[in-house]
Image (tube, rainbow, N blue to C red; front, side, top):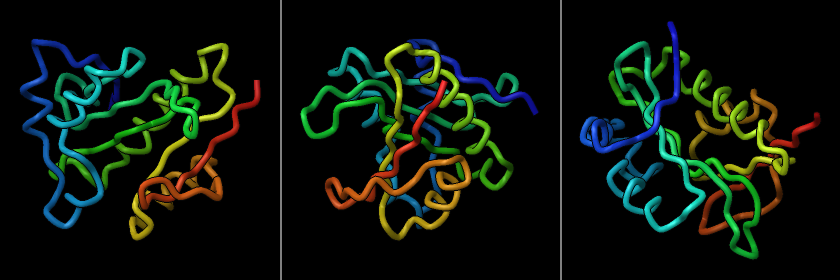
Length: 149
């Protein structure tokens, strides 16, 4: 299994918007179409397809947020298509995103938020070293990963 992150472009965005989570997960994550549109308004936003070899199996959106109450680097979206879940792709993609953000000289922390009832996300993020930040933003729990050089 070779997992990579590849930019969303005019050549692959339609593949990205066809990826879906299961019906019982739809309230946990915005659609990829919405995420791509949202990213167009934020110059530091990075949209990537998550690939297994040459097949896009997921999507992620991350970058720097300069809003006063949320300043810092955020993983805004992470989704794996329902047909590819449970195979370790989410964990592999998270490691790639963390590594990419860790390369930024001003990135000392990474934030992520999720619905409080999303136990799968909570366990994944905690297993990667994220801890509860003590905040709730727009009804979501905020977790933080402290990076040490």
